[in-house]
Length: 297
Ligand SMILES: *[C@@H]1O[C@H](CO)[C@@H](O)[C@H](O)[C@H]1NC(C)=O
Ligand SMILES: *[C@@H]1O[C@H](CO)[C@@H](O)[C@H](O)[C@H]1NC(C)=O
Ligand SMILES: *[C@@H]1O[C@H](CO)[C@@H](O)[C@H](O)[C@H]1NC(C)=O
Ligand SMILES: *[C@@H]1O[C@H](CO)[C@@H](O)[C@H](O)[C@H]1NC(C)=O
Image 1 (cartoon, rainbow, N blue to C red):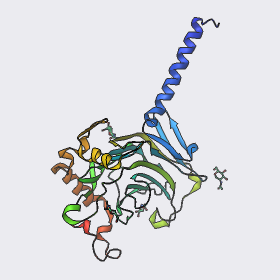
Image 2 (cartoon, helix red, strand yellow; image 1 turned 135 degrees about the vertical axis):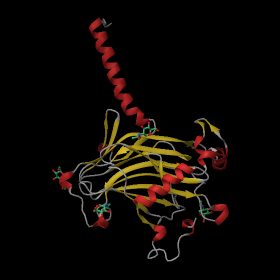
Image 3 (tube, helix red, strand yellow; image 1 turned 60 degrees about the vertical axis):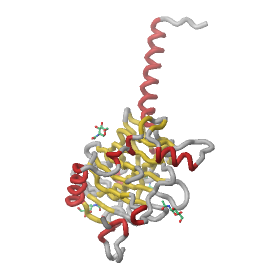
Image 4 (cartoon, rainbow, N blue to C red; image 1 turned 180 degrees about the horizontal axis):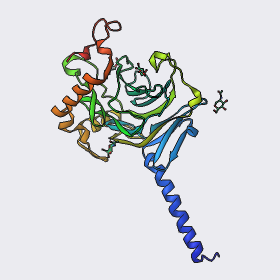
């Protein structure tokens, strides 16, 4: 059989450790997510994952598991330079009809013009809850954390721990629907939306600046993982809604202090909204002559 001399042993060790580090670079993401379309437009570069849009395609990924309650975070850097016409989305969604969805949509812009962050919630298939903000930093030069916290009391959108939007559970008090019956997967994608994204669709994608690339440093999901096989729906809902511990450890996203914002967070929310909100469906009588019920506080 083969004689394994020292040089060969060293080469083998090197090869194994290289293969390991390559595998590890990918595995950080691979544990949590998988490509969902146009896999050739997803690029792994060291510790980073990139979604690429060019004139042939956009792309996207999805979490491997579904979750009922938890916190999902994308640590990412948006398309630099001219991103007009492009949209990068980070969102949670249920499958099938009458779906629930919590959305971030990052609307690109011309070089030097501000990105807008649109958030939306679909509940039982109905969306039309758009809000738009600009940001207090340039999201194309550094990584930032964009999160959604979801528990039985509230859905909170947070950027670097600053809450920018809260949808509270007002089901028992006001009969306003709250998503609590189905698990969600976590998604991200990039695509061309130059029919509406930038200045209402007036600014088109300049393909001479392609490829457009959004870069992820991490996708983190702490949540109550939905069972895979022969799931007893009722008991899964119960397990994720009521218990404080699961195979994932302690369900910290449902603890007392997660049920509503603390004073500091409320102040941050007020600050973010008073200084950066540019559109709110709650204040759009042309669209909603009667203000949607969840808007009253
Ligand atoms: C797409 O982009 C490539 C590379 O820039 C270019 O060669 C090709 O002609 C473009 N295709 C179309 C349909 O515009
Ligand atoms: C994002 O959050 C993680 C975990 O809290 C933290 O370690 C990291 O520094 C944050 N990234 C940025 C850009 O703030
Ligand atoms: C969604 O709609 C169905 C059917 O109208 C209803 O039974 C259910 O309670 C609704 N769920 C939520 C979360 O509003
Ligand atoms: C793009 O920049 C223009 C000019 O500053 C601004 O009016 C617009 O809101 C920005 N964002 C989008 C997505 O159009």
